[in-house]
Amino acid sequence: MEGQWVGVIQGDNSGGLIINIDCIDGKYQGYFLLWEETNEIVSVSADITVVRNENRVSFTGSNIQGIDKYTGQQLSYMQLEKKFPECILPASINVTADFGDNGYLKGHYKTSIGNSGIVTLCGPNFAPSIIKVEETSWKKFKEKAWEFKDNSYLYRGQRDNTWRLRTTFHRRGRADLRRYFREDLPRLYRKVHAQTGIKFDLKCNQDIGSLLYLAQHHGFPTPLLDWSESPFVAAYFAFNEYKELKANKGQLVRIYIFDKEAWCRDSIQVESFDSNLPTITYNELLASGNPRATPQQAVTTLSNIDYIEAHIHQHSVKTGIQYLTAYDLPADEFETVLAELRLMGISASSLFPDLDGICRDLKEQYF
Image 1 (cartoon, rainbow, N blue to C red):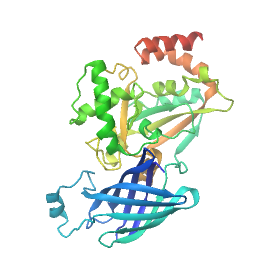
Image 2: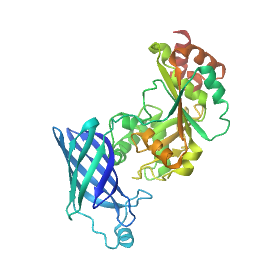
Image 3: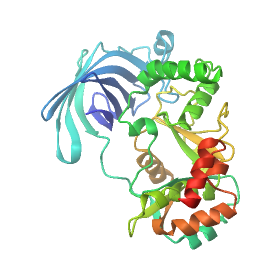
Image 4: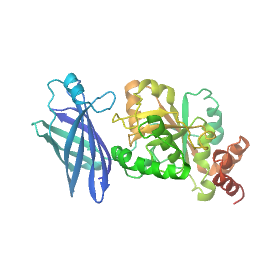
């Protein structure tokens, strides 16, 4: 039941619905976001508790707050009164839904002020969205990579072409980012500060980003997704583990190419890490205490969306622009790829300038 559920609500309220659920001590809880289609009705968020009874699920929403649909920020009482003078927020909302085919939830909602309608939700494990993928060889990929000579594109390598783009936060089965920033971030900061002595102001977005960036490069789950400005660094991360894993015949790695410039132009980029607005926001973060960032030519995207590819695909349908493409390459080319990347100066010791990187580099060469 935990994870991010995405769908629509129809009736007295109509619009997009996102429900983020964590399992805490065996209990399901989190929050939902309702983005109204019309500007005449306020979009809202609410804390929720969830009870599952076999194939039936009940959601109870409380602490309902108005949110600005263009920034994702909570509206104050004065802002709410000014923008929606006739608005009455309900004290509660109740949803009862049943599991259908392919993991969908379908049911009804009713609020304490009498609004009602139909809810349809799709869970975190639905089928992948369609993106443009080309199967190619390392030789042809190199030729293609040299065509991307400006800084408009980002690259990401993954050692399994069946893996979807997903932040480490969402890979851990978590969805409630409000809880993450309220509980996990202060806990992380206390430990990082004790170890490094670096100070971060958790009320400053730039400092929050730098802390997450540092933690991401040391294995802590974050809502950031790592990219590189180099297609060849991305290729290293796609291929580097295959000598140890022994690639299966026919296994493919994947290298994603993301049109950063077009995406930033056509989608809303949020300024706050705790914005409720569904977003994939490009970031160039300060690499405080993070010596790995520069050699990896690393940048990140912030995502409060679990299914990143589907979100990008929806924008592509609206604009007709292909923001995200991918190349699948045979994993058994890893020896040639890693040898050529080493000649380019791309290896474990160059990308990880510490003792771990040196040992990893020597292992890749001689073991």
